[in-house]
Image (cartoon, rainbow, N blue to C red; front, side):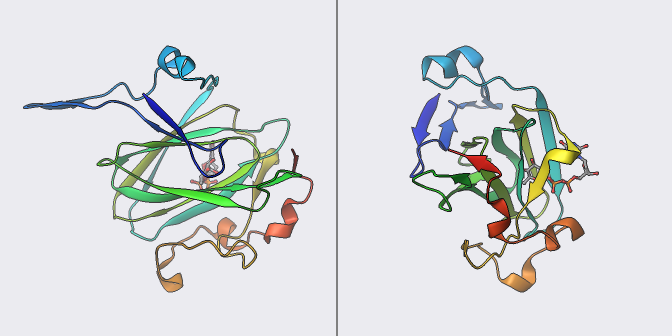
Length: 185
Ligand SMILES: Cc1cn([C@H]2C[C@H](O)[C@@H](COP(=O)(O)OP(=O)(O)O[C@H]3O[C@@H](C)C(=O)[C@@H](O)[C@H]3O)O2)c(=O)[nH]c1=O
């Protein structure tokens, strides 16, 4: 398993080996021991899956605050996404900065989004399925969101604004400055 630090080094791109043959392929998509050998040692408590029918579906930007902070290991099993992590840890040298990666069945990479980061994605193809492991239980009271198109963040979403399909909750999300004091570094 390849574990690469991205421009914000706490955010990692993890690429498992994929063994292809005439039948198709086989891949260990997650291995506690192999990842531990690479210095990645996280305890996951829940697996999530989402399906988005339409290209341009945006989910995010989301996080959970204490006591139910979640790290997320995200991958795509059908289709493709532009996946983004935004550092919202007050005092972090990369506070307010973001990193993104394209995740798809072809690229086979997974994005590790630690606690203290907003997470969101945009589907690049119709009928896209995303699965992700999380390190904390879902807790409605601890859910927080930030508006996807906040001008302070100015994220370069790979679609035209009028193509974006969002939940009502995400359309009503507060601006980036709401994140003050959600997390400290
Ligand atoms: C996230 C979540 C939602 N739900 C429920 C609540 C709601 O009725 C329904 C749909 O929830 P949402 O609209 O929040 O789903 P969605 O917009 O897909 O939320 C997800 O977005 C991505 C970007 C993330 O990072 C995830 O952690 C999560 O926040 O599912 C759970 O039961 N457990 C969960 O862990």
